[in-house]
Image (cartoon, rainbow, N blue to C red; front, side, top):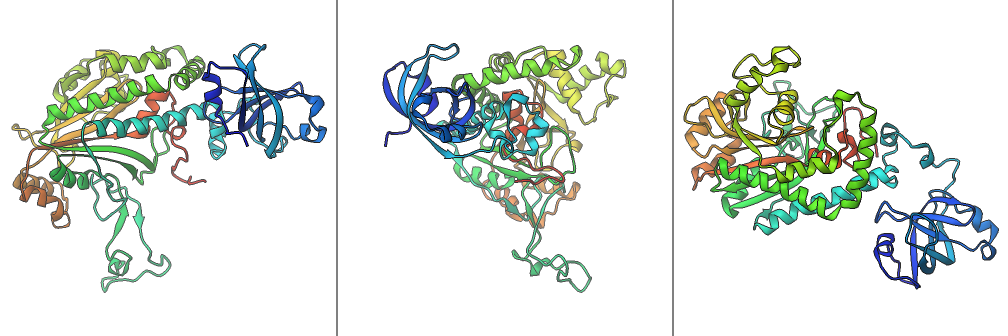
Length: 479
């Protein structure tokens, strides 16, 4: 048996006139002679030329779109347009039949992204999703590469947790209790002491708090895992299950945190531009076609590759929340009441439209906003000397809004406890978290980057459900 070679390998090899075996799925079969074969290693197909004289008629009928086949033959220079080489098949086997009448992916009728979400188990076989998920793999690899090269420790934080890191309250409960007849306390409430873990538990919204514990021993750690929000939101920006990258660094102040986050993002983009150019070019062309359907004022000023290079080659602008509010208050869309949420003064919680205005219209660069009002940020963020703002930082991107959220953490035990009490965060339940402030506390910082948000930016896809293999959204947990 000949060793199987991947299509990508054959297409990038300068050699010809050698024997090869390829295996993959039929994309098209024309003139009873030419098979376009794809094996997922690239969006490009390998043309297989068959000799109909030497192939059984019954076998010929089984070569249909979607069928899995194996072919062995000689790789020769191609006479046809559009490909440098082709495989002249000597033997051909059908590995798996595919009924063309029932196969839902007849690519000639260009299925919509909405339709492909309904058949997400098959959408990997299209060019668009082939490109998206090869990039997803590459981006995940680039995350580990970046932190590994800087000596960070990869820490697996729990998926099942008894704490709510953000105080967000929108969590999925994890239980083995009989929902029809749960055990109850004397007061009539559900008795979680009888549950599997002996207490009420949920799916995690963040690995940050546990990550901080690791940073206080290893210096620098990062987490990269699934997180869950039970937010009943059906927008193109929300998922109930998504992946987060959360580094935590001891001895880092806010400035160091910003430097790392900017270097991290640029490193990811640089990796994709270098290693996934073919898939990026395909997605860039797809985006141009998609943009043509939009009204002129909604179209992006930059193509996909330009947008990536724009982030890579520009220094991120760093401004305070207070400066941002002044800019937004005096902006045309605010004065002309074009913003959905008008900015009336200091203390307003910035929305995506404000973040995008700062990046796309005002500065025309990625922006890092710092020093937000303490009222609109989490309990663990370090208070500034003014006692009004915290040492937070958000990185804002074109087309997306917030890409990264982070802060210097409050390392002072007394101040942290006071903030928790002020915000009604249970101090007793988080005594383990407070121990890092009791025993050898130190300045430390961290941030979170939503992996799917980064995927949206890198691929140019506009719906977050199209950059995760099996999206989990309200009323939808298919496959």
